[in-house]
Length: 182
Image 1 (cartoon, rainbow, N blue to C red):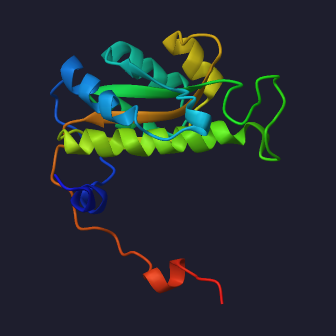
Image 2 (image 1 turned 180 degrees about the vertical axis):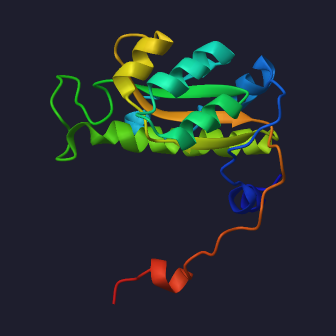
Image 3 (image 1 turned 135 degrees about the vertical axis):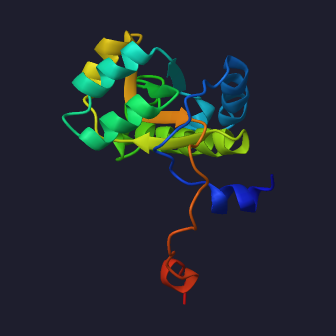
């Protein structure tokens, strides 16, 4: 699949077939996602795959702050990827001081790049995904038993799409998005 097709055709998927995604496919996805750029090449993104239906159901019931739409999506998915970032690395100097006025917000930037790269790599492998943002990160960390020193940045529901993607939603024209200096 060429890059342009991957970018233009990938859609957020919220309904999945009852078919597991193999460990080999997850390894291939992360093999590609690990090339996502990061602050000073610190590679802070970590991908925790939750395959257990019971654990996914617990995340759906206890961790999405009552947002039923996300709960349904998590329960329909073949797996839930908890994307974390190693804390106190992106945006920091070796002495622990912030490198820029953006302080620790660089880890969010790195996580966003990692999430998009993961989703594009998943699409290339025939796996659908959707990035979920409404959750209680402390509860997710506790319920999933995540390592200390990692901050939950996003939840990504994954699985084989139940239906083919619909047409792309309308996009703003390039002229509205792009400017050049005078």
